[in-house]
Length: 605
Ligand code: ADP
Ligand code: ZN
Image (cartoon, rainbow, N blue to C red; front, side, top):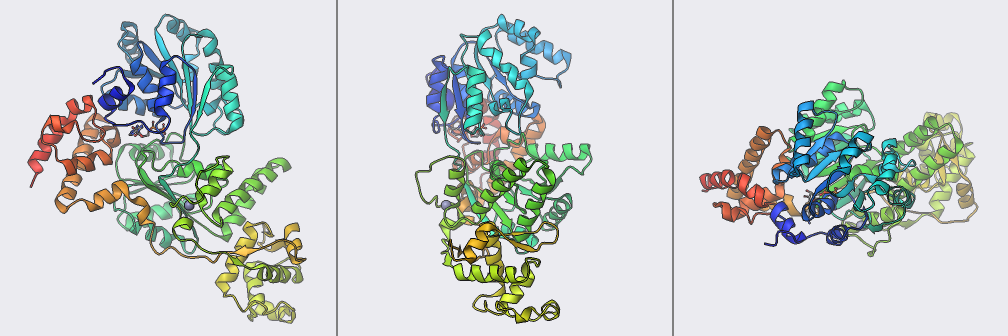
């Protein structure tokens, strides 16, 4: 094995056979001493882009990261792989920090994780001046942009880094950077002297499903039934109350679920977050208060019980799934009420007309994703400025079950006409009754059965009409009044009434089963294990849990599920054979080889 080649380190230290995507190109560039900006989606493997060069070059790599939990996780993972890594942060005792400095001064430490505010103090920099720094890695580099929601003023000071250390390469990494943010990173951190790598936003391993809301509790349970009994997942709910309800339903049905929302006492919330981050096979039921710093790699699904506020929020939330590159599912349910609710939020939250307008625009884009005529992924990626090479991803509900849209201009006109003739002061249910020619107290009192549009829509069912109403709304022909839910006609809607423009609608389907096919690899590999192997796999999981608890680290830091499946299939009984298991590098082979292979030998049937 060549110690200093990138491939050698990949195999020897991390136990992987091949680089993914642009990893190798980036690594080579950094090793050559160049500055790099790497914009890669979550799960693409950004960490290796600075960890491998850091190991290839002499000296210390300083990694700047915004969150203590992120730093700790990475440090633990490196340590278990046998690499000298530490973090200096406000949680350290003086004694700990002193010991770390001893290692730094002795030249034995390879990676030092610090926050930007810690690094950019004059005192720290004076120390750094004396050291042999081989690389600065700036993680979550988008925090430097004032436009983003994650802006951290401390990041701005990092702009001084390249002036003070002109000979040391800097790599900046982020998963979320639109062109404006990218330009700010290039300007501030690099003064323009940088090679950028843009890996695109596609997360092909995440299946995308959107289903129309029809009883969220049953829909959630039905989705869960199609999944393996134990795995990591996130269920997002809009309200605290719903978070509690969903947790209770899941627990009742035998799932391991925890709530997380802003209404909980800080301590209980911390505890649940900590459990989610460290224990395997947990479902976190959360409001959006749960987010930043969730880098558990083996989250298998994200279920939205309500519509998020924007495509950005949606993409960030589903992006927590499948960071390990294994199949994962994003399943969202949404309905008419979601649209109304979101519009109301936007109007109440923003006093500035400009912000309001942009809020509605972004919501409209998310709605056009939810009501997309074909491939959802293509719709989403185009929104983020990607230009996918395919027309159909094959891994969204619309690619898997194409649903034709139906020409429905006349139906749209009838519906809008009924809204118009009743003075734009009634909600969906009443208008649907009118076009269907139904009788209700309201209709007879108001003489709405005398309207020319009364009963003109008998060709469609009540549920078809609700779908039509929702899609008219999603496409901006009508809007729903915030307070009373009465329907109003937009300029576009009046145009349609006059015969201008088109309207096609797509009948709703309810999902028969959760998208099983989209969870092929590891989950299917687990299901497909022979009974005896399955048994061994579950035992190995327990062993992993014990070892993780002993060391107080998250289970996945010891081994991924994929590694355990590989062990259950290969059944290595010598430390030597153990080295061939997926994700086993030299250090893990040494640390865990005996324990696991003895265990496997004992449990062989
Ligand atoms: P990011 O920071 O881009 O979200 P990470 O660096 O956390 O992603 O990597 C995600 C997961 O993929 C980690 O478990 C990591 O070990 C794994 N990984 C990264 N590169 C490779 C590779 N070349 N082969 C196999 N697994 C990889
Ligand atoms: Zn698709």
